[in-house]
Amino acid sequence: MHKYNVIKILIILLIVIFTTPAFSQTSHITGHITPLESELLENPITLDCGAIIREIRGRTFSPTDINKINQLCTYAHTNFFRFTNHYGLKVKEPKKSFKWNISFLPIDSSYRNLNDFQYRFKNTFIKPDPNNLFAGYTDANTSYAFVLSEPQRNTFFWMVFVHELWHAHSIFYGVLDSYPGTLNQKVTQDEVYANKFTEFLHLGS
Ligand SMILES: [Zn+2]
Image 1: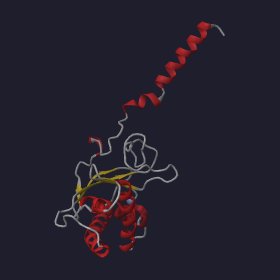
Image 2: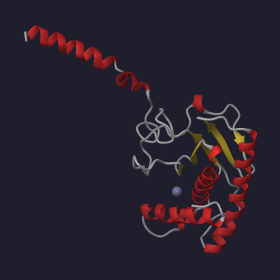
Image 3: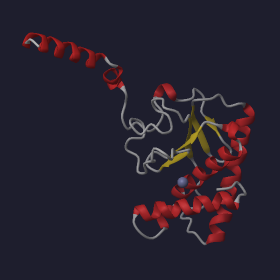
């Protein structure tokens, strides 16, 4: 092969590489875990429990879905104190009125989906393994719970939602912080209680 031709091929290759989608994706934002301006609901939905739905993507939620979510949040919130009493867990400020943000996201391969660990969730504390995708994730730094946007899955969806609400309450009321050990040990302990909590509420685990 002539040297000139090699250079020409290289140049063509470079042009091809720079115009492939992988390179045009540089506009993708890394580590922006909370909804982007364009993803926020125009009218956030404040639930009776104090949580606020900020984002719903992947599926349209019917008024019946929202009602069920509202009921579940109240159910979880009320029973949080019963549960912590039952297990003798420390609630730092029980009088504080609960406030947390919620995003409902699709689980697919799209940019900024619930398992987009390449961009949106790149810097999260816990990482999923590729064979075991996340159905929910609660982030202490931003006070956000991210839950799959699949209300039609009924019992599974309810369980995941309330599981994440446990983490949100535990962080908000200082329960997670009160566990002994390192942050990793605290997170592991909180996972145990999250599972016990959904069982306690007859939602499975
Ligand atoms: Zn969990």
